[in-house]
Length: 219
Ligand code: PRP
Image (cartoon, rainbow, N blue to C red):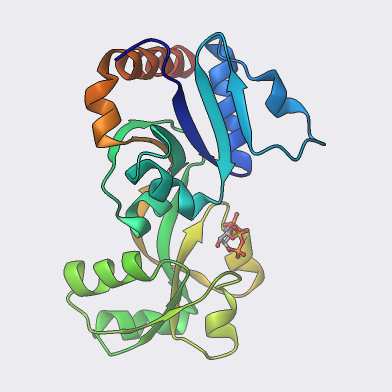
């Protein structure tokens, strides 16, 4: 396809987007427009490199990429797994490292061991369902929450939670602990399958340059 076509990136708003833009800058891809914090603009363009960027809510990033509204995206693995969209995961960016865990009061350990029918609160009902039903073969009731999930066991909404643990301080401050690890997490780059075919060279080149930069930083 022609070099004139824009490659569009959807970035999950917040820390991951900032880290991604830093990384792009390190390989010479800048987007000055995006640095203006007062701007209400939603789409940013680098005319020279024929790139466009937009910021979206994390869980919407795989949606934009699946439908081809963005060729590529950067979002946490938690979101990639939860949304389960038809996208290719091409690169682990290595930042935003944390873990998806089953957490709760120490007393809930017993309930997990004996495969009891427990209540599990989570912002990630699909990940929780997959873990309990397909990996542990334990029938549970999943309760979807939208945040502050640690409240679940504290107010007796649920026995345990499935949530992200980074430093562990939210758990500690609320008398909860990690009971089981579901999977490790970090930021991932995802690509629309059709874009991958139509823009193979540009995407491969870009992913290759980012990978090389990440390797340089690792040594
Ligand atoms: C996330 C996660 C935990 C917390 C873990 O919540 O859901 O609550 O961070 O971090 P820690 O292990 O370093 O304490 P977030 O701050 O994104 O807000 P939320 O609870 O509204 O989802």
